[in-house]
Length: 206
Image (cartoon, rainbow, N blue to C red; front, side, top):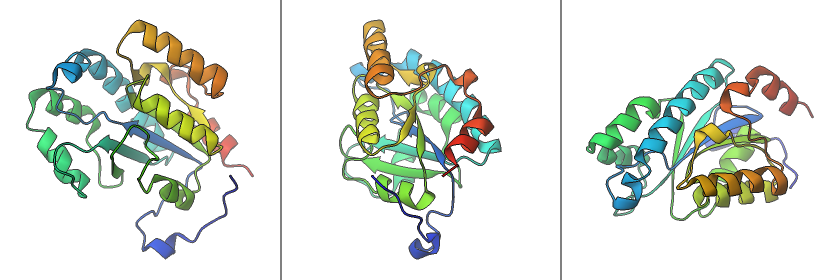
């Protein structure tokens, strides 16, 4: 898919950033109260700490962060209201302490697995002029995989640091890491090995 440069003023400064690389944080904002999510909580905490450190490094390079989360309960167009609801859970608060969306971050709600399905993400990425995505979050076999496939067919270069992705089982982690690398041509090295300034410079070239 060919992307053309867009005038960001056309959307009234709602996407003021220009960056060839963007960090996506998928479904990490949850109450972790259901049986399924409670079982992922320990892994999610480990990943959240890694994502938080990576986010700090990216911020210094001017790389924007997009939080994309499942809607919880009655549909809300206000993502911050949904996040506030999740903060009432003790587990949810512990993740939020590490990954609270900031005033300069983007926050989208999605209805299904892929971050692209029925969301404004593709339009937003066009205005930001992103060429590469750093994909993090949960889970590797569901929303991260579905999102990675949709990003791949849209010709985005993918970075999916394995220590920033939550898997339900070790087998899931192994299978999806193979798929990310061999089928989607993603870079899955651990987050500490991502050279952020170099990554931005390479993907910022025409």
